[in-house]
Length: 165
Image (cartoon, rainbow, N blue to C red; front, side, top):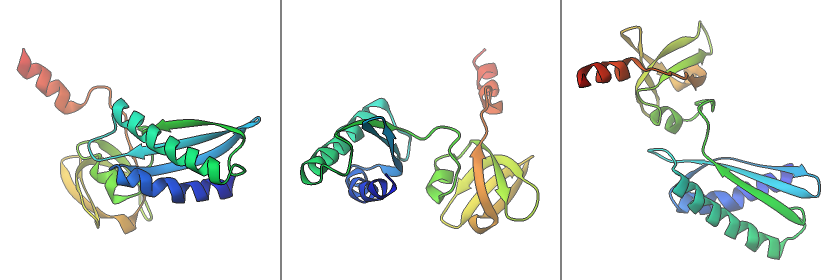
């Protein structure tokens, strides 16, 4: 299945990109006599259910055309699952960091202790974090990975609620 996932990524990726989305992941797994094709997409501003439906149609068209030309690539039947990345997705690319401006993240650095801070900005070279009130710039070369921290009540959300009263 690994070869088919690689081939599918090469066929699906450009089609997904042409519709304005980033193909974050594509996996193919066997499920009995079927294959399960899992596609994860994202875009600036996030992905809505309508976006998922659009991408599902696009990927389905690609798979249908492929099934006509190379029916052995996938099992006789397959299930297509399209989703957006979850909050637990690691931040590995500059676009991942850019899409999480204002979010609280924990970074794993190549050298040193982990750093937790709020993303202030991100560009192609690195990310600027607010770490306990101090701005800290991290180059991507220093960062092994970053993860968004789930916040049930963000600090700035409580300020907005107090202003509404």
